[in-house]
Length: 327
Image (cartoon, rainbow, N blue to C red; front, side, top):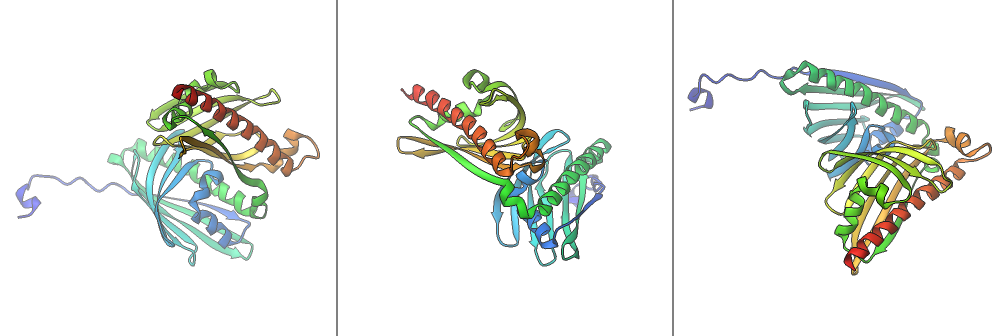
């Protein structure tokens, strides 16, 4: 006997209404270059303003499962998607496996069409449903798609058209300090960023909220070696007790993007703690900030020194905190 025969009075909920959208941009770059940027999600946090962090859950040459953290209408959302990559057809299809309210389901496709050898058209298709067909939810999703899709398309356009300079503009570096203390104490120091104004002399102000456990939104005023103060806003994602990743959603004038992470690894009787930064320099801002005649190389050196100084200071204070607690 079927379920409907057993319970004939049970009514089926109507299927949710599907909604669709299309966003596109013309790119002065070869189609293969554009598709390569869309296909490589590991660099999305640097390239796309809304994207905070991406983690691979599984992957092979043609498909991948990823978890994404991104901002949408001022909120931090996370979801799991499966993506299928087709470099021959220059497409990437995606479908959310686990969505976040008000989204009930979402999927779509990136399509790159060559216009000629040096230009292309990039189209981003979405289809979605919302929980209970709520009109407010539909409006929220459409607003988020309009904002985020425009930012992502603009990011791809900028990166693809500057692909020849990307190695010059984008760089990463690490600072590592060995700490003869417990990793849990080091993690406590790094995780409790709300206490940094009391613990770190270069932090003048820090406001932190954590409405979702493990997702921290913070605004910070930082003093630099020359006495100036920079205001930054960041989203941090906390993994267990040994890794914190972050993205600055408001960056200083010299940068177009800044992401980073703190990692804690057991080493001997203590831990090695590493701060990694990845930065993209904004070339149009170099002379405005550093003065006439300065170059991207000067900006790289300036940013590297400023970030490294602050990171190392943070690590040294974490070292003193953890080692004093062990002592």
